[in-house]
Length: 125
Ligand SMILES: [Zn+2]
Image 1: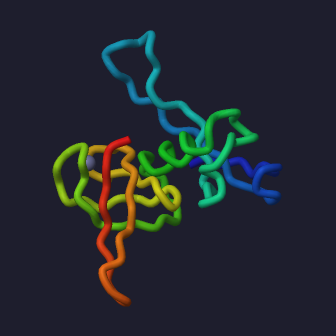
Image 2: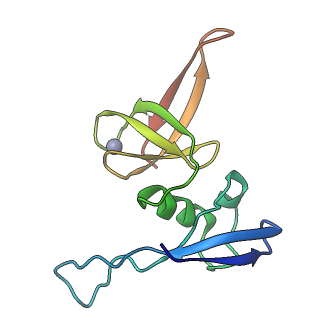
């Protein structure tokens, strides 16, 4: 995997950028993949716009979560409203997670039950 180290003015430190592989679909005119992915996407990046790509920060988080690229991620297990399965989800920020089974972005809320237990409730945006 080829990565380039670039200074990110949003994060105030160097981040690693890479490109997703272009995977061919039936429509040659609609290229899929070949997008810039930031391997150092952090929790604060989901707010506002990514200064390196000009895309909403949330888009960058979804790209990284959907890619098979090695990266640090936090996950939760919750019922996915989109595919109906109890699935592992990659946390993007305090309210958004990506389902590992169907790739949908869902909003989640952690509901405390008592001092030590909580359940995660999701809904499709
Ligand atoms: Zn799902």
